[in-house]
Image 1 (cartoon, rainbow, N blue to C red):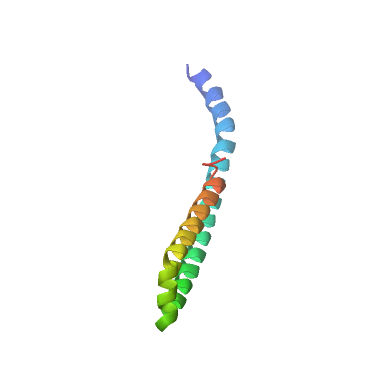
Image 2: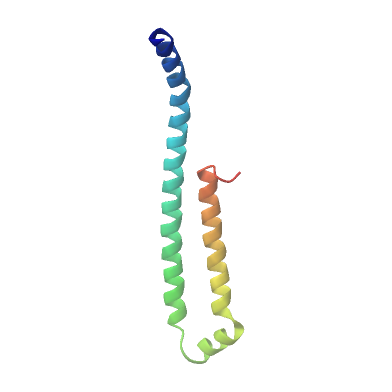
Length: 95
C-alpha cells in the first residue's frame, strides 16, 4: 500500500501545484486591483462631495430642484458597480 501512495502523491502534487499557484496569483491581482480602484473612487467621491457642498445660495437651490444630488448619486453608484464588476473579472468570478 505505501508503495502505491508515494507515486500517487507525487503525481497529485505535480497536478495541484500549478493550479494552486494560478489561483493564488489571480486572487492577489484581484485584491490589489480592487484596493486601487476603491481608493481612487473614494477620493473622487470625496472631492465631488466637497465641491458640491461649497456651492451656496441660488445655485444650490437650482441644483436641488434639477435633481443634481440624485444624479450624482446614480453616477457614483454606477462607478462603484463597474469597479466591483471589473475586480470580479480580475478574480475570474465573472466571465
